[in-house]
Image (cartoon, rainbow, N blue to C red; front, side):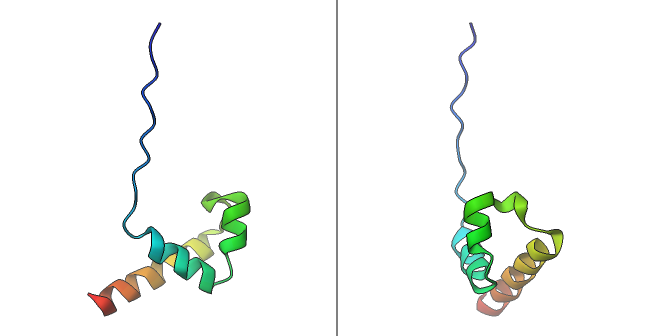
Length: 59
């Protein structure tokens, strides 16, 4: 019988920034209860756009 490989969760270095922006937009409760997949494309794009802006400003 084949053994299953343990799932390795990769840690995204931008995860804290993503969570901070989601909290500012008021989406954190939705993410915690339903997961990231529950966000609309508009909300996910807004988070991604703000992440890009902040990374450019700080970098």
